[in-house]
Picture 1 (cartoon, rainbow, N blue to C red):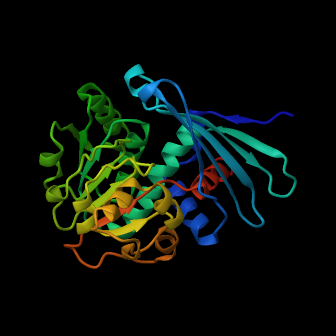
Picture 2 (cartoon, rainbow, N blue to C red):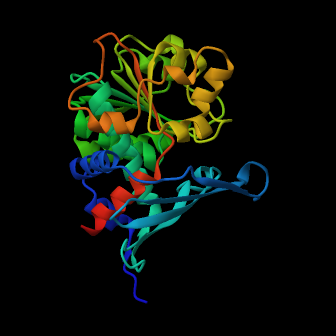
Length: 312
């Protein structure tokens, strides 16, 4: 069987931001099935353990697919991407494989596009300053995606490695044409930031509630386990919280789970999800001073939408 392979560069070329953001919006409007992903830990020695994720999705009358990815956090120190994997797309009528796609690029782009979709509903329309916490592939895509939906004039990039932060800033300058600067302190950089996006798989919060100013939109992407969190409970307590999917958030959104355990948040306070944001025809913000927050753990519906767009 000759199944075409769509490599990383081709995935990026076939998923331009406006089209990808709209494809994910349309996918959530149509609906589909995406069970909470399987997670398995592959022993590789202490902190070098690898997370194996399996994510299927399908919808009536459409194609279906499954993503298999390995997340190796120790790869950052090796100069390698954290995420590697493959996406297999099947014909929904015959079950015949249609294509095999690079899942690293697919995941980074659909993750960023989902955050941009949420930003269209939640951030202020005049948002011009973006703070990006993180320097990896997802973070770099998040910069471009946020710039595609808001009039960003300055991007501030923070990373644990100054050299990686400079590389991320350089790439963002070339892709977006926006002024990008490397910052050494998250607290200082948060001052005046209209949008704060974070994509670091950490178990120690990098963002504190005291640093968030009224009117800010916070985008949390990096934590995908109950033990992980990028923002402390005060961030969650101060914000109007939205999620990508409620089932995924309850199972995996460590930022929200830990805020619930701390007694400053409860699941009935979640204001909405991507289904509601996809259906909305106008901003969901309640005012210029409101702090909004989008917590993403990822949905296989997004993968399927991105894979189908690649083949269209």
